[in-house]
Amino acid sequence: MQNQQIAMLFEELGDLLEIQGANSFRVRAYRNAARTLENMSESVTDIVESPSRKLTDLEGIGKDLAAKIEVVVQTGELPQLNELRAVIPAGVLEMLRIPGLGPKKVAALFHDLGISTLIDLKAACESGRVAEMKGFGKKTAQTILEGIEHVEAAGNRVLISIASRSAEEIVADLKQLPSVSQVSVAGSCRRRRETCGDLDVLAIAQDSGEVMDRLAAHPLVEKVLARGETKQRVRLRSRIEMDLRVVPAESYGAAMQYFTGSKEHNIVIRRRAQERGLKVNEYGVFRGDEYVAGATEEEVYAAVGLPWIPPELRENRGEIELAEQGRLPKLIEVEDIQGDLHMHTTATDGTASILEMAEAAKARGLKYIAITDHSKRVAMANGLDATRLRQHWNEIEDARGKISGIQILKGIECDILEDATLDLDDEVLSEADWVIAVLHYGLKQPREQIMQRLLNAIRNPNVDAIGHPSGRLVGSRPAADIDYTTFLKAAADHGVMLEINASPSRLDLDDIQAAAAKALGIQIVIDTDSHATNGFESLVYGVGQARRAGLTKADVANSRSWPDFQKLLTSRR
Image (tube, rainbow, N blue to C red):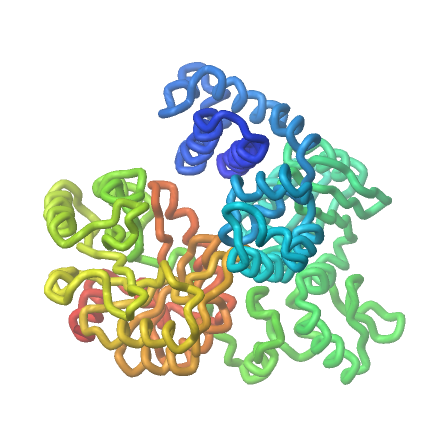
């Protein structure tokens, strides 16, 4: 199992124990273990299997925790967690998805009011029972109602990071079978949507039974839900369901096109086929009963008069017209990114030093980075005031002399305060090499106030970029109410860059607004917001979002070489 998947089990264990009323030190130990595992660059599984390494060598991992981790690695399950899941209804844990509703409040709702589902919680809020509880009140009850709407809208979808890692691991395993000649991920995961409701995997295999047996036995699979001759549905331990389809070689391309989607894109493809006297389905392209094409996606698109269209663009947002005109963009690739301009160190809430982050970035092939620890408003992350920030910048200058092959910018992630001022004064900000301004607090302010804050930041000559502009967390925290027409025009007018934050829980800007920014000529920066040396791995998700927006290298500022990026910074300042 991957580190993140193991960490999720311990995070859930901590939540359920807190809801149950367990000792706070015990709860904290599991949560700390989850953070340790998630932030590790080394595979936990490799440590367990290594004769020379011990889990107890890791910070905060004692014998008891080490034994539990070994069980998870060996069996894919955490018995203590399974016991708690049997006692505490799944709906109680689902309440934690509601913004602002932590384990303590969920415990009170569960134990004091007997609420165990979102439906019960909604009814209790509407009836006034929640407002009458100690520590809640009318405002909290209303916030919970709004949060329930957000959770219901998100549905039972999982982040692209969880979905894609699971799918890719299973695909890699199935490829090892001698009977399998081809196997790939399809569906919304292949289109790199922010979240996935389920997973689709297609395979060409001489022995479909062997492929299905292998999938059923995979450590990530919790249960086989259905099985036929060529199709199998399973539920993964991450709770997402997966369909495996074994298809003939002559249908593989057609099946990939069909099951990749989107529905709206495929409707247009089928209509174009009908106009040419053809029929397109998951089995191939046909003229009457005659098979015309279908072994590759290229054949399918060619049959309807189009070049192959990258999966990320298949949303019926103009990609068909671009393909007709021969104007499909050459989408940006992960390998194109040369710099990362948003990351944190131990100066605030990161887990690695300046030099450690720089070494990790260099190892990933990056040529320049900006260290952007938090400003003082983010007190919970030990944010920096002017004095500490200047000392931090001195340490960055020292680090520059200790590493070659990568440039380190003196940066800051500066909060845009609720009163529309910046968290640090202009004298300090003018000393920075890179300033990224962000909204962290007051995200529920009315649109007028949100816009005043963003526009003031854009107009400040020291601000280089606006980071994760909407402040949303995918599936768990709604976005701020932004007038994007005004916001994007202001960024274009003032030459301020906008960020696609690659953290899978943010992916902000979203693909729609990133495409709108591109149309206005706004430069985008794709940043990882790394808090650990393994955080650079999330770059792939930010690039996926950029590809969905149709972005090319020319649209992304940090795809430039260091000299060219330096010129861009100098020219805009």
